[in-house]
Amino acid sequence: GESVGLHLPTLSVQEGDNSIINCAYSNSASDYFIWYKQESGKGPQFIIDIRSNMDKRQGQRVTVLLNKTVKHLSLQIAATQPGDSAVYFCAEIANFGNEKLTFGTGTRLTIIP
Amino acid sequence: DTAVSQTPKYLVTQMGNDKSIKCEQNLGHDTMYWYKQDSKKFLKIMFSYNNKELIINETVPNRFSPKSPDKAHLNLHINSLELGDSAVYFCASSQDMRQGGTDTQYFGPGTRLTVL
Image 1 (cartoon, rainbow over the protein chains, first blue to last red):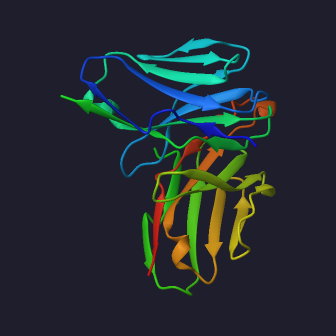
Image 2 (image 1 turned 90 degrees about the vertical axis):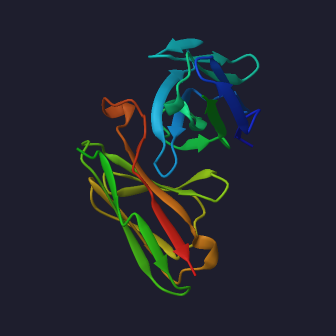
């Protein structure tokens, strides 16, 4: 069935270094992917999205890469800061306009000062 | 300005009680959602409403009844609460791409429900 999974449940990175969070998905028909950041005690916050007709998208300090061949998604955070510490989720919408988001299990990113 | 708001933020209640959680969005979106996040942080969709109509119902027990009085509000009523209902419940909203939006879902701050 459809699933969105993450390779690593936890990740610790030195402040100032770059972080890479990975995500695997199984539905080759998925056409929209989103990365969310969830800080403690808060709701998931949209970071960046990408559609299946793209393989890279950049935001402010964040880049999402999509490899449809191996059904892999990654989030790169440049020059990590303490405020980047959170749980990061990838999510997919399997069918355009379906609006049903399927979330991965989440990766906890800890920034070491 | 709060885009998606939920009340209450915390809810502690006894097993068997009936409780409601309220959600409001001021983004002008026409689709709203309820998600449940368990103790392992796993987020799973429960319901989705588009313009007050139910469009997604993910095999949630019928003790859970969403109600959308208008497209800016989606409330969740839970009857006969059970221990397993303890979780954080998130409301979200989005604007359908077919209506000029981006499908991106914006989440509320969550309601932590504890059933004793």
